[in-house]
Image (tube, one colour):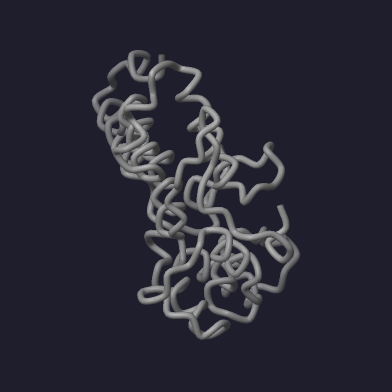
Length: 206
């Protein structure tokens, strides 16, 4: 679909029925955060995602796994803004195995300020469709602080960069480094504690 030519969608098709879907940009953010939350059991994550987009009314329709899959396909189509189905959820700004360039949670203030500066849109008051939000988000200029911060986080510092410049970018990386996920911090602390006592970590890495 083309956001310039086609009407924004407010429903998806499940079992030949047109089912309303929650289009608020906040739902897309919560969706990414839910997928990234490894503390949630799979069934709870699934139910949370379905409820986020469809509300409680969807559950009576979930009579078998085929219906569940159709509902999830509808969510993924909507989340991807009707584009390439190979695009994976960003999971709060990161791909699997990569350091995150941004976090909707920790960068909320910077994102809010970027929208105000660039578009004069108050995200606390304006109700944006997810597709609108994503288009505007991707179009944020490099001049706003949020985009500069993402640049600091993702840049590779060349070995031959002048020392003063290198110190500056190293400092920026430290200042704007995102907190480690709580689960990773917990595991790392447990590993450190075991190693300090000369213990065996084989049980933790199976």
